[in-house]
Image (tube, rainbow, N blue to C red; front, side, top):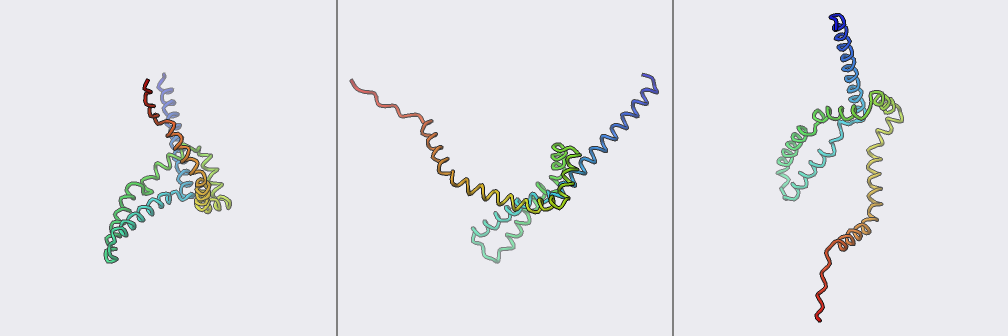
Length: 172
C-alpha cells in the first residue's frame, strides 16, 4: 500500500469511527430523553416505599414507644442510603440506557419520543401506572377463582407421583 493510500485509508477510518461514535452518542442521548420522559428515574420508588414499610412494621412489632420514633427514622434514612448506593438512578441509568439502545434503534427511539411527547402519549404515560395497578387487580381477582382447581391438580399430581405402598404379599 502506498503511503498516500495508507493515509487516505487512515483518514477514512477516523472519519467513519467519528461518525459511529457520534451516532452512538446520539442514540444514547435519545434513550436518555425517552427514559426521562417515561419517568424511569421513579422506577425504584416502590422499592424504597416497601423498605420503609418493612422498617415501620418491625418498629410496630417491637412495640417500641413513640418516643423511640427517632430510632426508626434513623434506620429508614440508613436504608435509603443503602438503596441509593445499589439502585439509585445514577447507578442504574447507564444500564437502562444500554438496555434501551440495545433493544431500540435510534429511529425507533425517535418515534417513541414523538409519540410520548404527543398529547395521547402524555396521557398514556400519565395513565399507565393506574392502568397497570388496575390490570393487576383484575388479574388477581380472576386468578382467585382458579386457585382451588390448581391446588386440587397439584394434590392429584402429587398423589399420582408418590410411590404406592406395596400390597402385602398373600400367604398361601
